[in-house]
Amino acid sequence: MNCPDCGAPNPEGAQFCNECGKELPKSGSAGQGKPSTGEDRVITTPASQSKKGVNLKLVVLIIVAVAVIGAAVAYFVLPSFLVSPQAATVVVIPSVSGSATVTANGSTYPVTVDYYALGSGSGFIVSNKGYIVTAAHVVSDPYDLRYKNTIRKMDDKDIKWYVAQGALYIYLKEKNPSALSKLTQSDLDDLTDYAITNGNVKVTSSNLDIYIAGPSFPDSMTDQTYLAQIVDYSASDNQEKDLALLKVDNPPANLPSLSISSQKPKTGDSVSIYGYPKEQMDFAKSIASTGNQKQFLESMANATLTKGIVSAERNSPKGTTYYQTDAAVNHGNSGGPVLNSNNQVIGVLVLGFGDTGSFNFFLSSDYVIDLLKKNGVI
Image 1 (cartoon, one colour):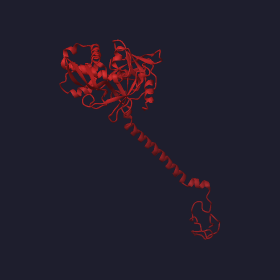
Image 2 (cartoon, helix red, strand yellow):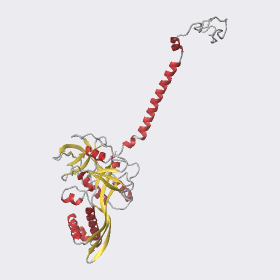
Image 3 (cartoon, helix red, strand yellow):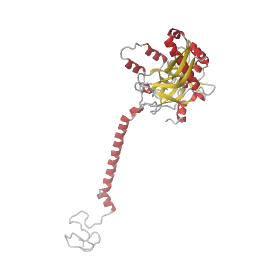
Image 4 (tube, helix red, strand yellow):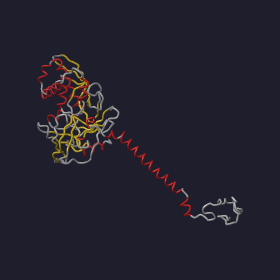
């Protein structure tokens, strides 16, 4: 037979070519004596098909792996985004503490003010680091808000004044409770001014304490204390932008946070508002303390939900955009989140008028986003 490579003749049955030493085709093999072509190699060699098959299998495996990983991510990660708005809404209680002396009837009494609340409002968690957004007037000077309708951040002098009032309140509660029961808030304010001016009360230490409570702050309504500091106070720049950013000193781990939408509300949109109306706190005080009081107080740590629509868009002469809503809210709801149908924050409740509780206004989330960007809160 002739060698298919060099063409040299070889004896019948030889395994190797006598001339070039190449292995000879076995007798009876298909294509014997015929040089192979590129087409033959493509058709008869399974390498290309094998490689293609491996790639397809690899692609399928990758797709399956991505699908499995995606399902795992959806299972383990998505719930953290599906945050309950009630879990991320908190009650904000500004108060003062300190010490003072009260002089009356020729005697001086030392008074320790552990806790003297100045009011309450609502807020919501925007970061698991413990950042909370509320209305600025919730943590503003109550005196100016009450008599001047002005939102002003308290300074050291204001805080000292409220410690003096707290000391007088504690003194009267112990020494003359009947007289205290007859005093209105206006009477107590006047008495505080008089006592400070005449030296009947002297403050030796004073602190502003902003208490935070809610379902994501364990035992915050019973045993554990969570205090926050004011990080930013937007109303100091423009009173109409009634927003403040707080930061909890030692927040619990894994705090839930609400998602904030940049989409502008439209008239007719449905809204949900979470918060802590004053009536909710009054209800808690009216219930007898017998039985499982701890369980009851923990239930009171959950915000109240009300629903309504965006009634109108209102633009102030200063250029601030307010949105009107008919959702029923009351004192204490201020600073609470206004949510769209996807449970995303579209605003912060800041104003209410009338006695019906259904003529209220919120600032859009645009202002919240600006506040967070300004302070580097993601």
